[in-house]
Image (cartoon, rainbow, N blue to C red; front, side):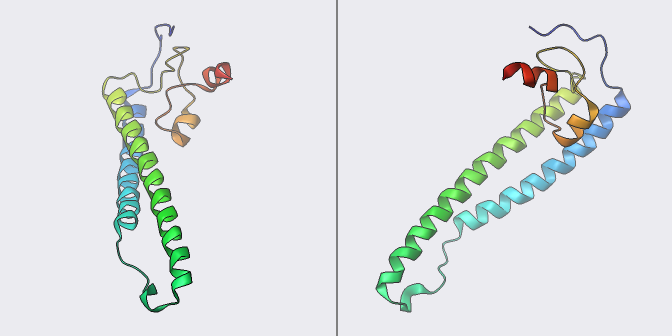
Length: 127
């Protein structure tokens, strides 16, 4: 169970994290739109006039590509959701506090993984 933190990130630090996360959300949403447009793209590459034996390979490839894009989209949506949840923690002033140890998560870790809720110490305890 997490202990009550005695310290938290300053309002200035939280504002910096909020800016970082907002930029990441914007980029992630743009990337998601690209993934979805690739997934929804119903256009073919003009294989109608090619030999029938190659058409089956093209269709199989298209299905695999759509499945791949679908998985990427799901992952991207989860990333966006996690980032938005991090913004809520910033507003609540609980951002950057490990949910297991109750200690502050290293600032460098949060810069690299801004939606992190566990410190490296807590991640290592999971192994």
